[in-house]
Image (cartoon, rainbow, N blue to C red; front, side, top):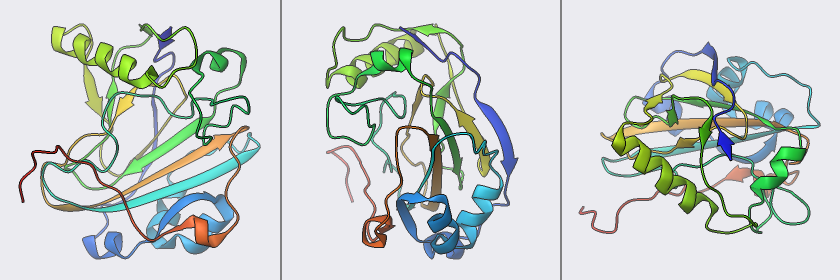
Length: 225
């Protein structure tokens, strides 16, 4: 299957926020655009303003994450993957069912917008276009493990290369775009916002579900304090 079918597009930028502003920003989970603008705070509103939203899909969903990073901590599950893969019979990407990447060939792709602050933990992308990778023939939980191992091998052999979008710069892409979270390299407060324009994923409506009261982080088991 062919990945990286289209270019990642950079749009607007914002000034690097203070750590005080980042750590006092609310986290949001699957918020509507209206609720994100209303409850997300100054930084969230500024980041959304830097994005080139198309307003041509049925839904707009906003997620924000705020992490107090330490070296070696990864604020996202590491490994090469794509976003928004259809899952199960409903094809809802939020369903807790097996990913069905073959369904993407018959559907219109969502549009994803991302902006990350700070310098030590920026999302990585693959530079080359039209990258052919093997995928399971049927929906399978091994999809991203399979993809990630192939991408890692090609990076090691120099067949492909990776790069990061600059800090505080909004970028947009579709659901064929390979990317990966990375481990932090220094102590830092980090804000990440992803805005998804989609016909498949509706925002949540209950503020108890929308406003995050905790964040997840990931690190190697041998990590020492």
